[in-house]
Image (cartoon, rainbow, N blue to C red; front, side):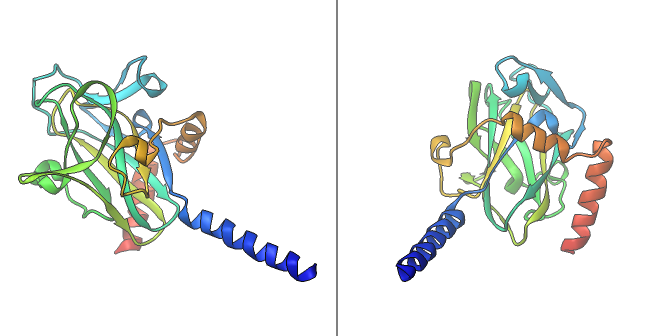
Length: 223
């Protein structure tokens, strides 16, 4: 009986450990709760959006333009590994369907709006209603899902930069499930009250100062 109990304990620990190891990291963020936002990227209201708000560079569809302004998110990843990003978006047409996206330190400290590096160009899936789209490389040779590799846990900096006005983003979902090619496969979800609480409490009173301070120290750690 004693040995049976020991065996049961070992098996339980093994199963529990396996489940923990296999569990995907999932982080849901509200776009309007960015750590820093630079105009003309602004917050706007929509009762159909998560928490009733989204961010964009204001403009009429088919207007094109953009190229300045961004939103920064400090994302504290709990473990190293490969990550994918999904956005809850609206993209009306071919002139309002893209952002620039960098996620440091996996990506270099590069201003994609200046360099126009297509490695960081996200061709947003079009649709006039809110829908999920996996963030990709929109390269000259086609569109391919992106993955980011982080070699340690800790704070990272995600930047969503304006490329075309009228492209809207409501929420962001980060996951270690990089194999999923459809939203249901990735178990994407909108932020809950708990997610919003975590996101807000991660900011200092002066969110802009918090972003500059914590990311500055993180960059030094990775250099």
